[in-house]
Image (cartoon, rainbow, N blue to C red; front, side):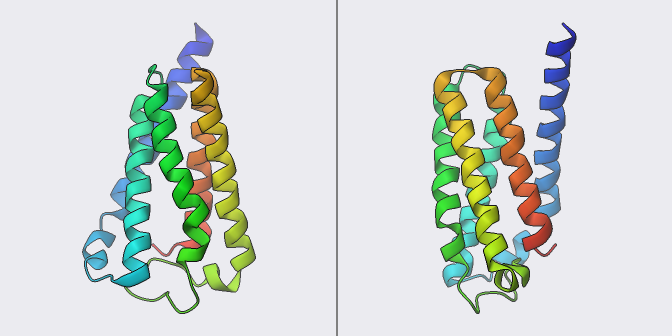
Length: 155
């Protein structure tokens, strides 16, 4: 019983973190309205990815493994494409991209790769129908988002 309660509390904490991430991005919505080209494309992809992450957080503990797999796969597709969406010179307003994306591009590419690897684990856990592994893999995915945002995004 104690293990199940710990899992439930951990899931609630992750869901709260995802929700707070949404609140933290609210001021940027107006700035994004002026984005065009590659900057708009990547902002749209990040917004879609955030939607998938929130949806997966709501699905944790359910048996909706196909839905989790589908959403994690969409996030993975963006994760693979992400490094190419930041060509040199595409920073500055209205972009939230921090200069570190270009000054530490190898680190940024590694961070994107870590995100994809975590998503691979989430997809594998969902395909196996292992709710515990899905929860743990989801934590890892959320952690890769946070780690990348802390270094490579301007708030």
